[in-house]
Image (cartoon, rainbow, N blue to C red):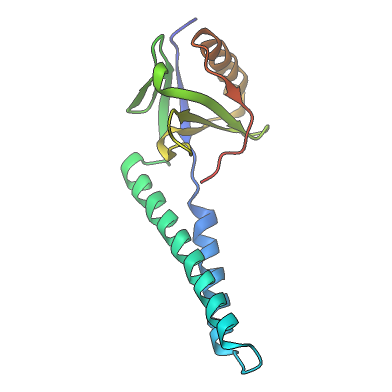
Length: 161
């Protein structure tokens, strides 16, 4: 197996959250502004609390993504290197003993993520996309052989935020 360095880019997830927060905020605004006495007070307070929780959740995720953006610069291209005992993406290096699985999300222009042991989600800095589609087959073949050698399963599952 060659220790070739591939140039990939990190995944950018910020657009989804930026467009969701104003939508939920406007819904709360119209709910509060157009409230009438026909709705019981308990249900009104419960619905406002639920939407405030959702907005808080998305705001927290937005904060994490912004922090990630300033730390890892997802607009720049990074180097992917599959070494005999580790996996390197940019400046982040992970030993094969710490990797639980490699997840692939999507078929065309897919996202690849490295799931670590003991973690429920894939860290943002260990997600990547191909720089161009011409690279896709070459990287996937090398990734499959590398994962077979190190006995790391490849899962075709959705990668969540």
